[in-house]
Image (cartoon, rainbow, N blue to C red; front, side, top):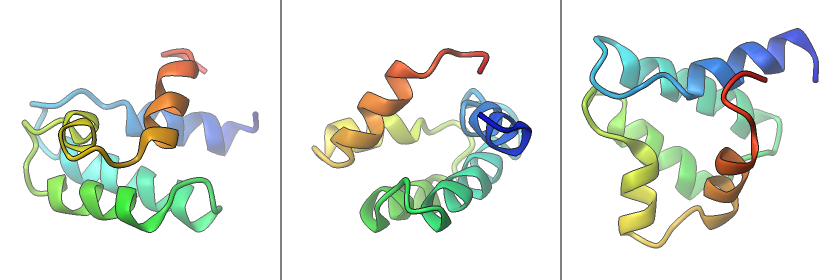
Length: 81
């Protein structure tokens, strides 16, 4: 995994509740979307959550039964790539 990808993995794992964390996660999500590693409906959840710093996009994806491939991938990647 290259340094840029590692950086974006760290950004997309920014914990909810931190100021600007929603926007940080969305920016990282866009990186993965542009590389074809995230589908549009999953990116849309990150977009919606981008203004809601306290909202966990993975929880939203689970509650709407969306993004199962992305959720699995997030769970499989170590916290510190």
